[in-house]
Image (tube, rainbow, N blue to C red; front, side):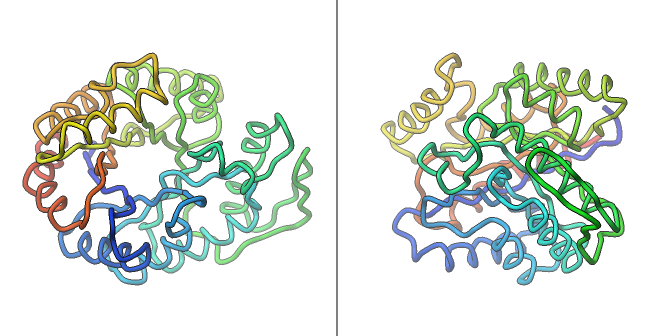
Length: 309
């Protein structure tokens, strides 16, 4: 890859014993803007005390002038895609070039599926069609769509972005990677090793070529949960056990770095695998953002310029 920029943002997490999701998000947004961090990524966790990511995007960009804000990731099946497109169009008008939507198929927690209802066995099919609807509405002044799940006649959202928003998708299953190649503009992975990320990128590129499309070189990224120095052995074990439950086939120690030196090595490994965008979050509970961000600034920010080509 040539001419690409490595960028490292921060993923929001609830604080341990913090003042609540509203004050916590305000503190984090203000800290990131003051420090010049590239981006903030908001998870879709409707079943826990957290701010809805689309609402949080509006809140965050209203408090800042430079910070980009993404969703990591919004569950699309179960939401009205026309309303999602209208929300994104409004956000893009309020904060041009600072809105980074990323979508996923399934809620992070199984118990949240009832909050995003879709017909049994149809979640992937609903996702594909909903994504098509969102993309068309963000690019075309009038959309007529007659599909299995959505019916639109001359629908529109306004104001349309000057250029269509880049839409990234999560996922790591082969079907999900092929979907990215067919329908999306980028990939935001999670719970993968650099070797797996390299293979995922190749799968996406093959699917994009088969569909007559191309994904830009700098539109591949992943989440990284860092266990910072000072965390207990029990916290580190819990962080890796959480990954092991999701990926019993993988070595969790290769996915969850213990300390910033391991985090730097992991980022370098991902860059060698073809990834350039990263969302870093604490892998263990923290009580406030200041200390974690001080470490992030000192230990990881320099990689952005070091690794950019």
